[in-house]
Amino acid sequence: MGKITVSLIKADVGSVAGHVIVPDEIKEVARNYLNEKKEEGKIIDFRVFNAGDDLELLMTHTRGVDSEVIHKIAWDVFKLAAEKAKELKLYAAGQDLLVDAFSGNVRGLGPGVAEMEFTERKAEPFVAFMMDKTEPGAFNLPIFKIFADPFTTAGLVIDPKLHNGFVFEIWDIIENKRVFMKAPEEMYDILALIGSKGRFVIKRVYPKEGGALPPDEPVAVVSTEKLYKIAGKYVGKDDPVAIVRAQSGLPAMGEILEAFSFPHMVSGWMRGSHNGPILPVPLKYSKCTRFDGPPRCIAVGFQLNNGKLVGPVDLFDDPAFEYTRMKAMEITDYIRRHGPFEPHRLPSEEMEYTTLPKVLDKLKDRFEPV
Ligand code: 13P
Ligand code: 13P
Ligand code: MG
Ligand code: MG
Image 1: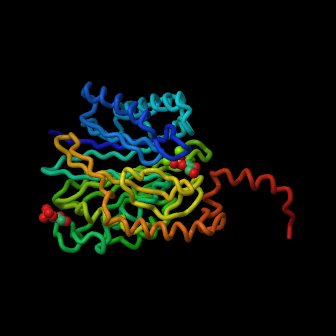
Image 2: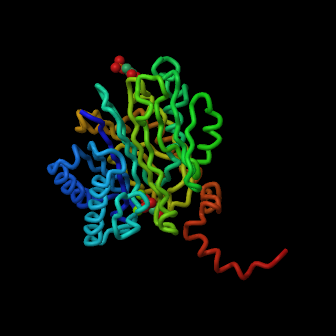
Image 3: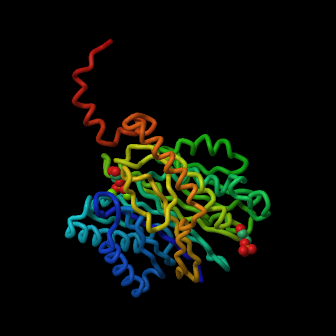
């Protein structure tokens, strides 16, 4: 068998009770359509999830990344689902579909994409992470920890196959540029960039040259689409997704998940305008209710079997993450009490694309020089 591509493509096409969940009726539309495409042999396998109000399509195939066939399938699912959402009068029906016509690729049209093509190993465990009410930079901290922090990933120290470290592909999503950097050698420089998570975003991670794994096949990928850059106005957060491969020359599944045991601060939450902790939750809690949050992350684990998906395992459905969730709720209570004050509310530069400028606009003539 040649290389396999795993594609995780998502969009918010409408939700129930405000921005809370994708209802079963919509997921059914997606499943039925993807099942047809599976029977036609266009994709090998698929699963449909919801990360809060985001419809998530996980597909496997042999068509490589950026395949027009695959992106068209995803686009058609979102269009059909948005039609159904309109029929049901769902909230924000069609929210993330920012253009009317498909033009070869969903990037730049609204949906978020994380996909990678690689040679399926003898055993190929991977995890799909899906976040709601936050932005792509929310993955910087955990992805860095997974592939560069020896206090998270013991294998970086004690497994010769990981000991050389990894290569990070980091995007400047404001200036649309990228840089490849090596860990551990350039660790401090990497952190200098990715600590600014609203601008510098880890896009992919690669193995280094000379190791057991092909250096040109990614081992992790994150969606980095910026919705406001496409729409020119606030339409919802760029709720991100990521795929991370595990074990045998890569961080173990438990090392990957360990990175989520710290509920770090991310931006998003209510009206996409607040900082708050990210909550790792089981699928049943994949719904943002308190102040439209707090932002959260689900994780589903699979083994690949010649492109077929064996799974999912609901990875955060574990009391081992209970303490993280409790901690996150303590932080939630603390930061919520700031109300409209920074740093709970985002700094004003980041509010540029929200509805705040309209409020400030009416005051502009009342300002006088001092
Ligand atoms: P097993 O010995 O259960 O395969 O576990 C190895 C491992 O990677 C644990 O992190
Ligand atoms: P979504 O980006 O998940 O649609 O949320 C938008 C929002 O404004 C939540 O308060
Ligand atoms: Mg929404
Ligand atoms: Mg969302």
